[in-house]
Length: 155
Image (cartoon, rainbow, N blue to C red; front, side):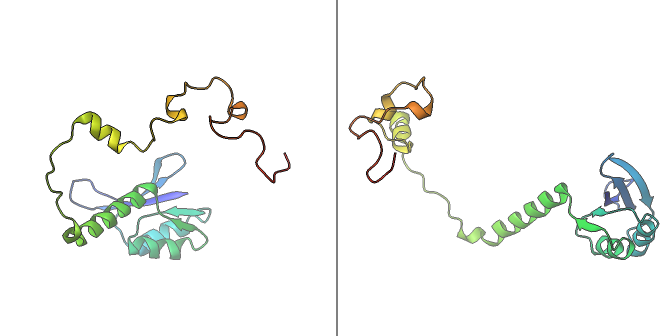
């Protein structure tokens, strides 16, 4: 499996293509440009490559298709997350008009706010019961409920 990506010797400048063995994480090739033809020639000289990991650049897609037609082309984790982040940012930006600022409301005392926000009911048998020391299969039924098999069951 080989990873294909751009490289730069100085920040802000793209110089060429770096090819990395994904299993060893070591560079195996450095191409002078980002041209599909250059990548296709490099891949064609290595027919054992089964997977080409790349970004969405059209010249990498074309070069991988021509140079290693037998190889499966996949996106790497970094590019997937990067692309997802860009898509989410664009979506939020497009819908920024839908977002309204929240109005300032007087604060409730902390204890009341926590009690009101809790999704768990209070004052029930399970809220006040101590933690069980027996496995779940031997729990007894809650107070006020019938124990034993439900009606119509064969147990």
